[in-house]
Length: 223
Image 1 (cartoon, rainbow, N blue to C red):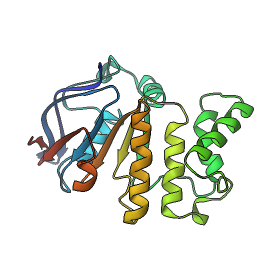
Image 2 (image 1 turned 90 degrees about the vertical axis):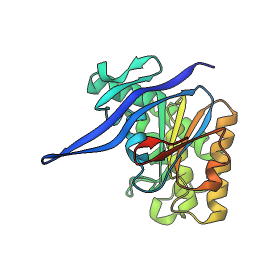
Image 3 (image 1 turned 90 degrees about the horizontal axis):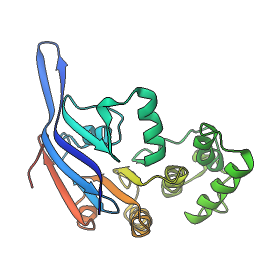
Image 4 (image 1 turned 120 degrees about the horizontal axis):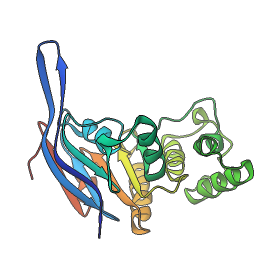
């Protein structure tokens, strides 16, 4: 299998006045196409920074990140946005849905920015919401939905551009254990169908389900 993401001696630091805060240090790892990888560590380990870097939402201070053959540091903001849209589907702990829009509208919105025709947008959004078990809830707004339903909407939205990589940041963090289990099973099913799945988590139970676990502590890989 070919690597879809490679981090080469990656470091990330921030200048805070006269102090330099090192969040990640000398990270080198490759993730292969179709893998299910868990990035695990306690609060403050650097997991969120890791997510922002591999999701091309931020750039490293040191080293390089190669995403699908592209060195992220050589791309413009516009090129990074296109690459993100094409290659990565984001699933967030807090869902990040637009409250004023229905589930259907939340899922179809990214396609508007891709200039997809309305008929095709509607068909794809309906199909994806049906696949995640929300056929009868697609015209409800987030305030009318449970946490598990909102996360299913977020997963459908993440899939709308058919990305190669699903990047999930604590996707069960705001869910009860039963609903969380259902969401993980849904994500794992997508992985079995060929999607590369990267889950950021502090949960041992979720990490144990992954093919590979990368443990972070104080910004470094410990094993």
